[in-house]
Length: 283
Image (cartoon, rainbow, N blue to C red; front, side, top):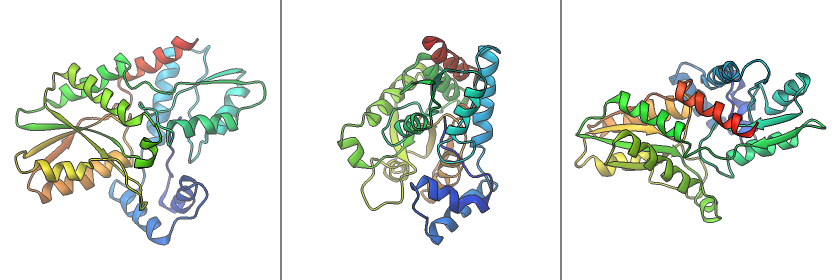
């Protein structure tokens, strides 16, 4: 289960309406998001990569276990995936949100969407979190080692920001992000790193930080190179391709510093092995 993304710029208003819980987006927001998507080629590869992840898992599990991909905010919707699984004869479903750390604003909404659309007679079991699964940490660490961090380069682990009120209400997301960062750093032999948040929503309330841009600002006094490791995400999409590769990179240039990032997990064999293990633990 993943967030979902429109397949064209023309679909942006309807997509944003769904993301916003049925509230129409302003013309200004629609125009801004279309501009962001245009900067990465006009569309996000999220759906295609999630489908590729599902196919890789399907190959690992074999023909006896059907695998489907469903999106919360766009086609193919989670409800459609459940219908397809029911048609394939499935009576028990294991749901895996494509987000390592649990949050009531992300993972729980995937679970809620599945439970609300569950066909009669079908059982549903969700994987709430896999933020410290050894194979996930190994997969991220592999990407860090492949990037070959330099001695004068600061590693910055990032995840999607959340409203402060959510964390203050008891949401364990920020703690899990920190645990993932420590685990990856240990496996990759990284002794100096920062944690930051990105992609905060456009609401007047405070969101958790520090923001990635603020880290670049604060650290640029002594640090001239940054390596971003987005541990809150498992594939390329707008929060990676635009928020980091375009927006954060532009901010780094403004401070006369350089910024690069590790390759996303996408269909990393280690990540696919982790998904297989999550399923087999529950079979």
